[in-house]
Amino acid sequence: MSERIRRAGQVAWAVVGLVALVALVGLVGWWVRVVWPPLILAGAIVFLLNPGVTALHRRGLPRVAGTALSYLAFFAVVALAVLIVAPLALNQADDLDDELPLVRADIERWINDRAEQSQNWIVKFPSVGELESEVGGGESSSRLRDTFATLRDFGGRVFHVVLILVLAPIIAFYLLVDLPRLRIVAESLVPDRARDEVCLVATRLNRAIGGFFRGQLLVALIIGVLVSIGLALVELPFWLLVGMLAGFSNIVPLIGPWVGAVPGVIIALTTRDISTAVWVVAIMAGAQQVDNHFISPLVMQRAVKLHPAAVMLALLTGGTLGGFFGLLIAVPAAAVLKILVSHLWHTYVLGEPLEQVADNAEMADHGSAPGVVRKVADESQPEPVAPG
Image (tube, rainbow, N blue to C red; front, side):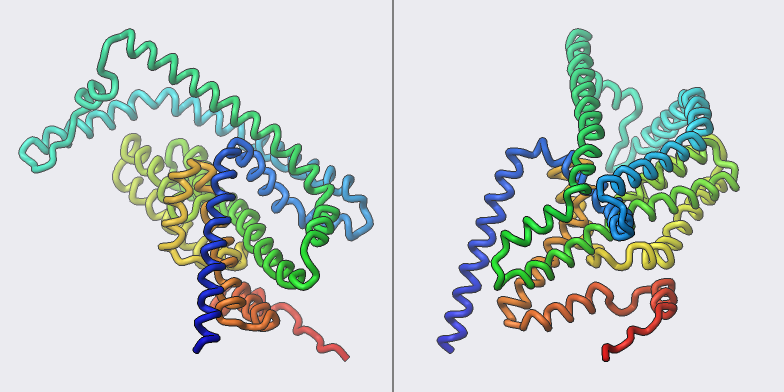
């Protein structure tokens, strides 16, 4: 009994120390939060391109040359996609700009109709005029100052985004070139008695984060293509713009697909009819079902295994604290926290040996019920040959 009490006390103090350490790191991170967006984007680039760079390095190509070649191939693919998609997207953007006053008039008419119908309701909907008076009320001089302040804030944000887009690839290039040396330096800082444990946790974290970023980008691309083709078949106006928005928003799990569906439904209702809007909803839902049952089980390789409720809480926390970048890193950050807490619990609370923890982690990372496509892919792999 005394041994259990002593062990419980050690665990309690360890938890208190871990919480204090996390709070201190979080406070320091908040002070230097301006550096996180380029570092996060650079990390995503590293996770995306490192497998290709490593493969080229194993074939005898110097890592600098492999990194440069990977960058060249990546930007060549992006430039080719832009050359193919940009003309059609620009034409649809011009058409949307011409059509926007009519779309806005239809939306305002719908809002005014709902406001008129809600006169005798418990909750009264405001009309467009009431909304405009609430948002834009005040003297003209005050509105002018607000306009200049908005423009100044917008200009600062644009400059910040451009700076991130310039710095992140440069940082990622140097990280990709020096990654093996950085790994050796990091391993040299770990005591020998803890090296196996740290390597195990680092491998799981690398698998989860890298799999998430690579898989989510590929899934977003596939969903964007599928939705664009489907909307083009039903002849929805601006189908390419809506498909691109659906693919881009799909980077954010759970919330993104719904965000991408809203503009398509609005365009269908204002420029076509209800049947077209129903087709848009069917296409969006069908693309998500294909993603959930076929694409993600194969592409994501179960990299991030979190309950939907945990994903929603992570997205809420990330969006509140970090805005758009917070939404991007919320799910992998929650996966990192889950891996760390699970490892600490099994190792230091349950007292399981490291070999058993490693076996359980391997089974969890390649767990059962992986989906139809993953089962077929696994069954097609050759059986490992026993040594000796």
